[in-house]
Image (cartoon, rainbow, N blue to C red; front, side):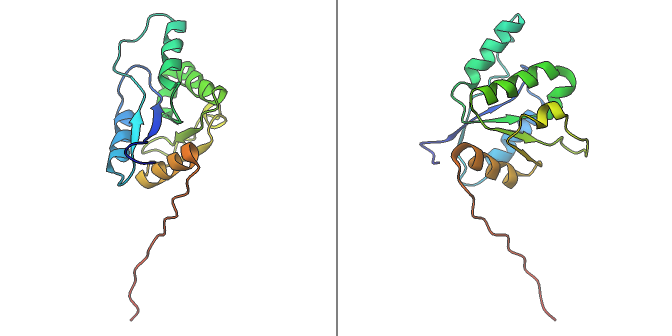
Length: 150
């Protein structure tokens, strides 16, 4: 992965830009040496008709290397997010599902059964999961803990 070869990501949406959608990109932008290309187009006009919506989503997801699932969509657009994740799996695209932001609510089984990896809202965990799932790269990061001995 480099600036010339970014990871192509699709983030689930229902044709609106939610707080969680924006938060994903805040996390990705704050990660050093992580390059990505966003293939989702939530700000486009929503196609009329169920099949037209699905076809547009298929086109958006076609070149994605990894799909990021946002569980907050399940409450209001459960059929749509299940379709997005199901299509990702049918197209052999890995799914990284984020936990619900700021709550300890259990994720719906309909979403967890389609996820390859489930991560917390943590920039490092998200970036590492995307690298693992999209490019099979391990981060090889080490946590350093400093302490003083008296």
